[in-house]
Image 1 (cartoon, rainbow, N blue to C red):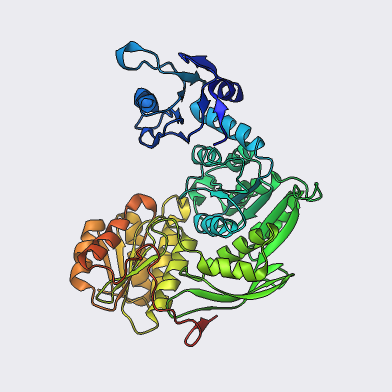
Image 2 (image 1 turned 120 degrees about the horizontal axis):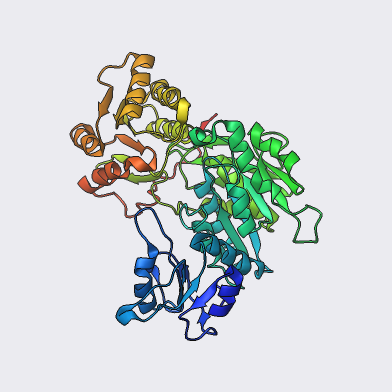
Length: 498
């Protein structure tokens, strides 16, 4: 974080000092909202959550080295002494104001905002790794993309930071507009408009309206050199392409469409399910081989390549950076091969219809038509009235892709998955409905054989990562690279082209 005095912080957030013995004391450490993460010289934000009130941990945070606490009420420490605090009406809103104050001081930093219905975290991780080659880069850890996580990420930036890559999530109209107000981006990336959270938004058009708030916040494209806004839009998604009319920024299209400035040609998957393609840009072409698994990562890689290009990276350097980038965030297409040859694909962090379809296609590719496959699937949440149809469609797709076994885990949504599979393929025991993750583990332990491929995927609330963890605990992995689980690199001969 850029060092600030407690008094400067109070003025930035519109707060008042309370029990602060030295207003000139400097906050030099991280700003955190988890008292276990407090470091000497830091600032603790006492956020009030659904189950935990940060004010209860304010004294402990100061004892651990925090200079002060951002709080909505005075807090007493041991012996009745007051905890040094900056008092505000709303701690979360104050975090946002502090992030804006710090971001405004990052005059040599390119701020990149990214949103989309799916692929945000994977693409953000790619961009962060690629831009790290060009200079100090800060990127959102994991999926901390809301009104708390985004400012906390921005507050880790320092004067030397060249790139600040921020994932932006939304659960309603106005959410992204709020986030862009905290950390105004110069480059904005919109990946896609899908059906994730469609139950909350009410339709894809409303999702597009919300996602497009990112490009509306960009500066004009004809601003001073290095200051002009750039909207990086998916040419293959009509709702995203249409956002070009909503921005003053220069528009750069990515995708497989012929008019995309940054596009992929000769797309194929190697036998392990990893994409290979030719990257085409106005500056030249280069061959790309990703370490990530699944065809859907081609679009993510193109978005990352478009951002890298805007930041000065050549096509050859872009291809090399993409080829070396790995999966940084857990439970997103983690592929691990057990010592007995069973391959476990842990994609249990989240699920929506688009990502579920992509994962099933990857499973089918990795099977190569000869290995037994297991799709262990749970509910996709927040689909509203579309939930029955979407779950039914996923169950049917599993049959069409020749997945050998479906294990549907959970309640009503799982029953719809099972129903779709049975209705599509007249399945009998190929599809099994079980009550919970432990029941799935019990079934798989007795049924999975060496050489099988097991996909585990559901919305985060279902906790299906427990299934993958249990399968890997039963037999140690063949390698120690659990996060990236490399299979034999067999790009080229035997690759499948669509």
